[in-house]
Image (cartoon, rainbow, N blue to C red):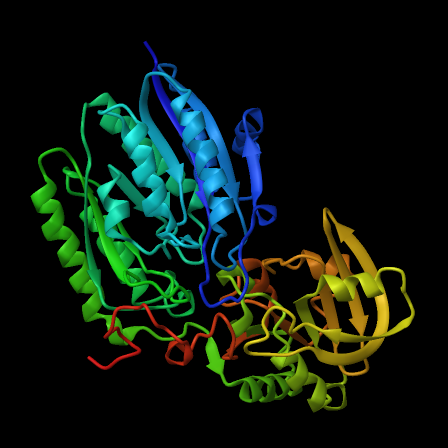
Length: 486
């Protein structure tokens, strides 16, 4: 008789400093047969599911049953009504599957829900209550997950990515599939142990390709050489979530009867991280906003271009509104064309209202009060005049290229993460010939990094401020490094 594994995804990284909610309309939802198309997808938006499906594809004694797969671009706290609706559908679908041996879930690990808090802990607790007694729950997590006691209590295994930027999403799904298969084939009951340290760290200071994360990830791989260790991971927490359990954690998934050794090993891995805490620094040049522009100008004069500057305080891939105008205001007032003989390019400002004013105005001049409509805490709308040079549609998103005398601004009808050069090429900007690009981002993905002669972080104020001491934490357990002294 075939073993039955249900699988699904409710995936969101929630920024509690963003003054907006994540609602149902923000989620991409896949159901039923559409979910199996994930296996052939070229992008990694559902990569963990893709990896799991690839692993079990030829396992004839297993039946893989879909529930729902939903995810949204990181943003504010998830509306309770939205979460409850998604949770109810997932639970209903699980209840309708008879004879479940296991549930495989792809979760982020830092989803926060209005009025509830720990979204993953609440979801896993509810799932565990309705499953057969011996059914296993195995979950993949983002390396920036915030591990909580409730999450650990209600699962048999948690496996996090080992890369940042995330290049092993599919591989993590494969590894989780292998773990689940091994447990079911050998009648194992995996045991999760974890250890947390009072430390917050951003992805921009913990890229895994460089030290000290490179060595720490290697520690995980060494730990996994133990015959009784099914998996070892680090979860770095999410610094833009004001949560009492936020911080860095180590996870060890041990085989049956090795839980005690798992606790010891998890503590050792956490201690290794803590000992290296003062070695963490920005992995890209990082400057104040004014200094970043000054350095970029100097670089262009030395023929170091294109230069990519990350507006790190307004990073939509970490949940910011993407309509902060502070860096736009600074650059527009500095008149860079007179200094570098080129207009800088800013991508993107999210402003659907401005897009509406521009869509029927190609080659016409428009005056806009741009941005600052959601992030009205750190910025305000900026008045700018320019010609609507081009309007394009990419799926459901409309992009506008506004060309002012001092800067080119790409405006979007939806929030987007700029992870590749495609948007520049599509809208008529040659990313090789232009000199300075300002992107709403933190660390750059390889596609952008490889195109740049030089990259740097502009340490701007905003909902994803990299200077953590400036953020208004209220629930975070203190003291915590590096905000407080140790």
